[in-house]
Image (cartoon, rainbow, N blue to C red):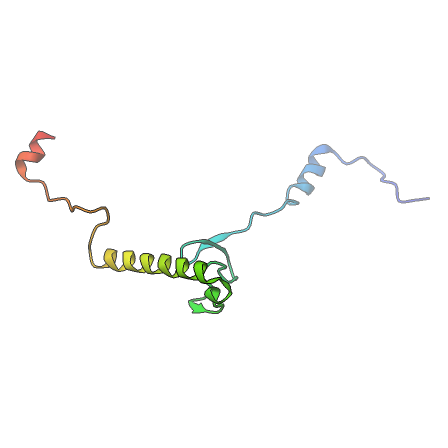
Length: 106
């Protein structure tokens, strides 16, 4: 006859066998240039960077308005990163260090 099982498989043995059959969630990493989430070993769709090298010219495919907006966004991000690296603080006025009188009030 056909291939019939001689004994019934228990629930636990069936569940143990199926324990490793599932879809794994993909691991994302951040793009070093723009900070958007990117699948590992793939090119960033936002800026066209792969392993620190500009592979795709993203601005080439955009219209004139979109290109100007994108260039402005990139310039603002670069300016903010330079400002942070120089030791400046974002948010306007810098805070002064507290003296002993102000510390005792808190």
